[in-house]
Length: 422
Image 1 (spheres, rainbow, N blue to C red):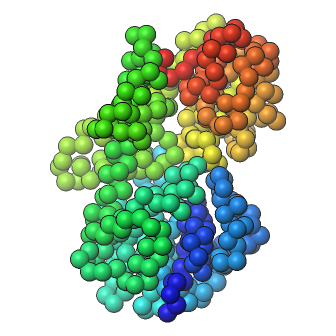
Image 2: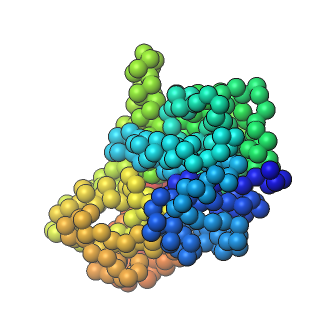
């Protein structure tokens, strides 16, 4: 065995692609495997199916160390094999683990008996132990993917959480060498602890999001400004500078919803109280409709057959994903009205809305609309000049939850600017 282990990632979805490229960037010879031949051909040509800042450049810089393939026989040369497909979820947050099961069986079938197999996809507690086999090295590792920040998270992780059959035994040398190359703490623990650790992290994030959203809603009704309060919270050591304190439109993207659904299922199955989790779910649903409530308050009663401009379709900036996107939820709720939409990455899909059309850029979407709604805080939207918007917009209402536009400049341009928490 060479000093640097040969690494494979099985499953070329968002998680697997970003993780494999990060492995190559650390100097490891890396295999990116997918049974989909067309996808492998596109990856081999440098055509990435995911949008992430700096990911294309990272692949170009380290292309010589990564091989994309649909031949499972190549896994036989690998020391560490990560099984890492994205786990799809339905509208309730329930996971479909069948793609993971198929790829895990494939990895075992084509790998050496001494190869280390690591499940990187997120699973519920109990999954990994149920699939452990005598004589095979199986581990679970908590994934840290954040859409829009995948390169940073994959190349500069805060820590590695590794689920083990016996956390008191040292990690296999090949896996240990690989993880140590990233220069961060490694936390071995039993399978179930690692599986639940990911859910615990996300529950803490949800608590922060729900708290910020709830207090921002109060600010809007009592004359307070949430942005003035946030610096005081960040200076409190019990809360900290990295807390999720920005108000938003509920929880979207799929991963946090999945963990809340898992918590409810576990609580109900074992007779523990998960009322707070159900409250978070209800809070998320309420906050998601903030824009719709503003439309009914400010626009729709006063304008017959209103025309709306919608900027942003992705569930957050710097990603192509529309999973549980608040923008798509809004489109479903304003079906009677004409909507012109623009997103710098996501193409407009006519199936989303019966009167939906696309625009070539943000200002073109705004033209002759009765109200502008900014649903995704893309950096490009922050460059928009309110005076230019006012010159194109037929009405005066701007619903801008994330404060992409400068508030004072909006007022100076004669726009009525509405933001979360103010």
